Length: 212
Image 1: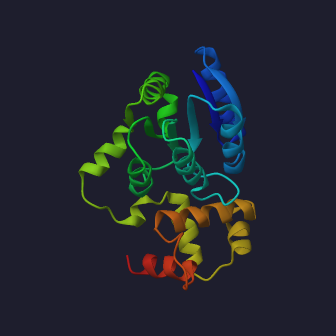
Image 2: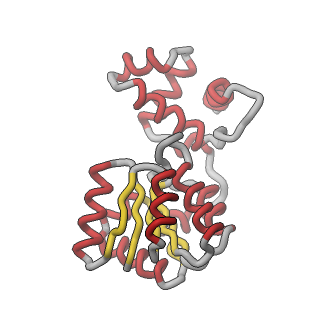
């Protein structure tokens, strides 16, 4: 199987390359961002694309948008999307473009090597592979978007509600400002605020938090 891989975490990216190579697959390119993914696909014409949802340059849904663009350009190309958390909207967008040769897995599933490789094989064969947790949530009602937040993301949102800037958040949480910005973007995304225009996403996130 010929693959192109996109993942911004160098550690996970190299781990996936080694895993796939050990299984006899040919990883034609392993890139850290969405523009690199589009370029690599055009250059190598792989059988399967494996991509993270959240990647540079915006660290939001760049990988997903790249996957949708790949499917638009090359409808028969198999795509397996990896996500840190369950996001029904992402899966819906991906499946709306055609369910044949499409997969959506949580990154935790990669640690279960057999499950990951089975999903990869099914996608490459033109079938659909959805993470069991995704299926479970699709079968249940809509959850409170705030329940999607991790404990650290809740801490960030709590401090945001107190009026702290990103720089102040970084100091209080003992992390880099870029790490805070990534958390904030994730919060906006999980609360379905990424594409809101005309209003401050920060204020809307705080209002949603205070009203919970």
